[in-house]
Length: 503
Ligand SMILES: Cc1ncc(COP(=O)(O)O)c(C=O)c1O
Image 1 (cartoon, rainbow, N blue to C red):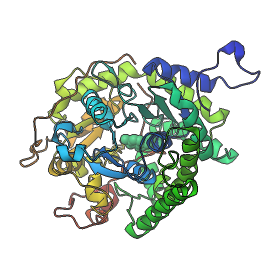
Image 2: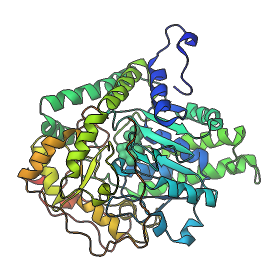
Image 3: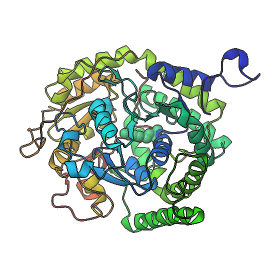
Image 4: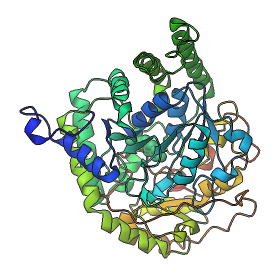
C-alpha cells in the first residue's frame, strides 16, 4: 500500500487502481510522494520513530486529540507543550523559552481544525536546531501557510483521510525527501496487521452508514446508541480516561524494549542510537512494534483497525471520498466564509484570507450548552479537546506549557463548526442565543507571537458527523471530567447541562 503511483501500462493485471489514484491525488496536493497507510496516527507514529531519537523531547500544542499524546509516548518521546495563541489555537514558537528550544529533539505541528500552525517559522527554528519538523496535517488537507500547502514545510507530514474525506480510516505519510521512503516502507511493513474480511467490510460500510444517518436526521439517536452500547471507550467525555497506573506500566515496557535493543547491538553502535542506516531502521521497527502493542489500549481507542492493511474494498472507498473532498472544496470555503461573519468566530481567523478549513472554531460562552443544543438539533460537534493535554496527562508524563492559561481558555470555549453544515449550525446557534466568550483576561500570548501567513490553496468533503467518525460529539457531565494524572492548580470544570446528563 505504499509508494509511487504505478503508470497504468505497468500495472499488473487485476491490480487495484484505487491506491494509485490516492497517491496521485496526494502528490498533486503536495508535490511529494508518500505512503498510503491505514490511519493518520500510524503515519505520525512512523514519522516520529523514523526522525526522532528515542528518549527525545518533542514540542507540540496542548489543544489536540488525546490519541496523539499516546502516539508520541509510544514513540518513546516526551511531549513538551508550547503556549498557544488564544485568538486561533495555534502554537506560539516565540513563546517557547530559549532554554526549552535547546533541549528539543523535534517539533510536531497540530494545525488544529485546519488553522495552520506557523510552519515557516517552525521550520526555520528546526533547521537552526538541527531537529526534525513533523507536520500533523490530519485537519489541514486543504490548508496552506506561507503560500504553500500545510505538509510541505516539514521533513514529513501525516494526513488522515477520516477528516475532510470522511472515510472513517486511511492515512498518508508524505515526505520531503524520497530517500527516506524505503526505510519507512520497511518499518511500516513490520507494523501492519493482515486484513480481516469482516473488519474490512465494516470499515467500508461505516462511512456509508454515517451518510445515511445524517440524511435521515438520526444523528442524535445514533450518538446516544453508540454511547449506551459502550462503542466508544471515551463514552460521553471529551477525553478518554488516562489510567496513569497502566500508562506507567506501558511506558516502562517501551523503555525496556529500547534498552534491550540498545544492549543487543552494543553501545556505540549507530543503529542502536537511531542511526539512519538499514540496520537502525530495522531495529527501530522491531522496537516500534512492541511499543505500539504496549500503547494499544490508548492508540486504538476510536479506530481499532488503525494498523490493519486495507484491501481493495476499503481503498476504493478512500479514493472516492478523497475525490469527494476535492469536489466539496468550494462548498466548504463558502461555509467558512459564512461562519467568519459570526461574532464569535476565533478572531485570529480574520487575519488571513479564508481557507477550506476542516472545522471553523467559534469561541463561545456556555460552549457545552451549545454542543448539547446542536446535538438535539441533529448536529454532532466532535473534535473537542478539553482539557488541554498537559492538564490531562500531568507533569509526570509530559512537560506542561509555561503559559497554560490561553490553551485552557481556548479549550473551554471553542466550538468547532463543520463549514459544510454552516447554514444549519448557524440557524441553531442563533436560536440558542450563542454569544462570544468573554476574552481571556490572563491568557495573553506571553511574547509577540508571529502569525502564519495564510493564502487560499488550490483544492472539500462530504458530510462528516458523529456517527462512526473517529472522534465524536462528546458532551459530558461535569462529573465525568477525567481527573488529571497529576493534580493541577485549576482543573477544567464544566457546569452546563449536557445531553448526556440533562437531555
Ligand atoms: C489532530 C489529529 N491528528 C491525527 C489524528 C489521527 O488521525 P486518524 O484518526 O486517521 O488516525 C487525529 C484524529 O482524530 C487528529 O485529530
